[in-house]
Amino acid sequence: MNFINIIEKKRDKGKLAKEEIRDFINRYVAGEIPDYQVSALLMAIYLNGCDDEETYELTMAMAESGDIMDLSEIPGIKVDKHSTGGVGDKVTLIVAPVAAACGIPTAKMSGRGLGFTGGTIDKLEAIPGFSTSLDEKDFIAQVKNTGYALIGQTKDLAPADKLLYALRDVTGTVGCIPLIASSIMSKKIAAGSDAIVLEVTHGTGAFMRDEEKACELARIMMDIGKRAGLNMKAVITDMNEPLGHAIGNSLEVIEAIEALKGTTASDVSEVMKVIIPEMIMAGGKADNKADAWKMAEEAISSGRALEAFRTMIAAQHGNPDVIDDYSLFPKAAVKKEVHAERNGYLRVKDCAGIGECVKLLGGGRITKEQAIDLSVGLEMSAKNGDKVSKGDCLLEIYARNDNEAETARMQYLKSVEIIDEEPEKNVLIYTLND
Image (cartoon, rainbow, N blue to C red; front, side):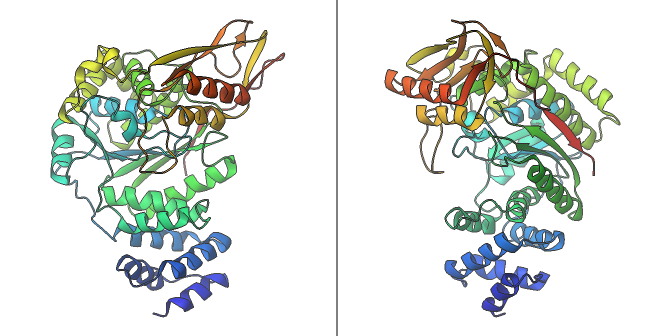
């Protein structure tokens, strides 16, 4: 096919046929189409969009550009959980072992953090010795034997997505819902699970700041998954303030362990109470949310969920003793408190600005290849809407040195304010059923 004709068709708001999309993806992966032509098509898609059928065909072409993982030898319904990310989002670390303890095989591939958002793989690497790399055979064997595994994405999974994402990143076409949806879902479909629970975040601490656009992204991803024969559920969560109290890799793993021990911040608990039942129901272990949550509570209170996490750490060569001894995690050299300068109510103005503190401390990255410090971060004593008095500790900063701690302190103070009236609380979460 003449690729220029494909560019012109989408430029003029035409609909691309399945054959045109397949030809584009196959030839681009083979190196037969130059980046400058693909950039033109991406911009045409960014400006004119794709309908649901085009988005599905693009997703499947990307998924089938590499390996499709076969999880059939793992008994049961395999359930994956994906979050679009945000500040302090450690939910995967909590829900995966709970689901596994409830008999839901969870074969999870996660990514690294970029910018002000953290990544599950970075957090896991804060555990001494932990390996986030398993070959396909070992990955499947671990899920089969222990219930779940958490690894980084394999190099042969959806190679078309890797090429297109790198190009989108430098051509101003990242923020396009059809391209975002096809990117996420191509990897999920290639990963081979039977059901997917999506957590789509919105707000100042998420990549999707607008709630309406977050809902549209969730709807499109659900449509793609259902067309591909998967059981899909989606949950929309508010990310206008950090989730939980900890932000930073080691600190977030510790907070996740505390949740598995039964101690959670109220917002983390609220997300757990929605995500975990959806995973259990998708896995066919319960018929309703109430029964599913009872199963999850028993898995936590009995210690089975914590034991599942311990087993996973050991299976992936990490030191499971971190569960009982937090001093084994990387430790920052400097700890600095930030105190309230007046009486009032704390209001978070900019969640991303708080996430930026961790990047300034060296705990976040600008490029995917950048090395990060796993010990640094923030521990928030006060959350949005909390009443505080002058002198109260609002935040503890864990830093490499005093200068970086002070820079983070100033950034935090730009991102919050203390006001006289209690701020309105945002609705944290709701479920998309269709």
